[in-house]
Image (cartoon, rainbow, N blue to C red):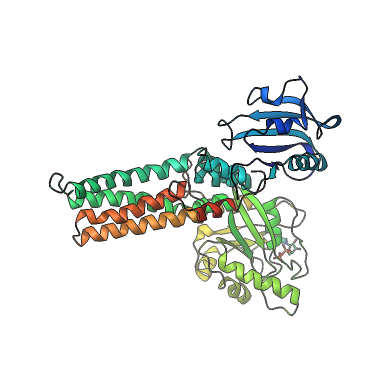
Length: 466
Ligand code: GDP
């Protein structure tokens, strides 16, 4: 891919809307653009003040009489733009066809269609943003919950890079010390090994905290992968509907009619649950249903959270226990549903004992059709206490990407090697090689010391126009 030619793309989603934005980035393309855009004030595009929207006409190439649309055009001159190059934005009307016709004319003029993420990639190459910010751009675009958006916003504002760079600077400082010891062995004494160990351990501690925050960051970004399990007819779909507060899954009396898995997102207390409704887990002759069931069992193994629903009016059956034993995650909430159908006292202690679960993880609900649901607030509290309380510190920023985690793990391993070398009494200048690995691994996260392959990996996830 050749960088620095002029590129263009429609940056708004496909479909009809108030406006669509076509974005162009490159150098010296204003004269070219003048062949399809005439500024209403009579000024040339090249004379327009930077960063100001200007009412203009878009017309057929070199034919001012054949007007296509009226648009607001802004030129953001290099280097003060998103990409660091000169950027133009054409805000035309938001019909799919009009934006497409304008883009086609740009291509006819020799401007190239941008590849996915190419604008942001240029911003990275031109030093406008680092890799954590580039990744945060995509996270902001894809975010589906309040906490997820806040975490991506913090990364976008540079807080994640600051945190990584802070740790990296301590490693760089230590490297300078070690290299001075190696260069001037007669003049500079080795550090006390306990002092050196403390410094390395303190860096390792911060790296470890960031690695530990990955699960939280991922949950903030992608949501909690949640599976609802239980026998047919215990009320799984009804619980799901109450959580979603409107009907999305089929709710019916015939066992096994929620045949396939319905996936949806539900926002709870600032975080999203990525819910997989199951077909009910039981032996089935029906092929379609069985496929759903196999997938459901698979989901029981991979989910972050399992909501296990029991019909409290029937009590625990052998089939309930059989399904319960398939659940592999430690995060289980047992929902004792249909409390409205039983008059007898519910023996919670019995469920605690038979299901080997803490009382906090048991919630009573009732979700009868057409009547108000009861207990959904408590269910939300239980989810919140498992995933949000004591897990998320609101003024912190978390890594969200496997790539970032891998680099931190690499740094941690190199720090472990250093500690081992100290413990085995190696000369201090020998630690330098491992410390260089720490510095490089941390630099990979921000893009300071990154290889082309990793850059490719980051930008291949982007959408066109960003
Ligand atoms: P699923 O097969 O586990 O998804 O169960 P459904 O959600 O389809 O519910 C099966 C039947 O039980 C439906 O008729 C629901 O309206 C009914 N139902 C679900 N929850 C309750 C509840 O808490 N109380 C009562 N009375 N009926 C419920």
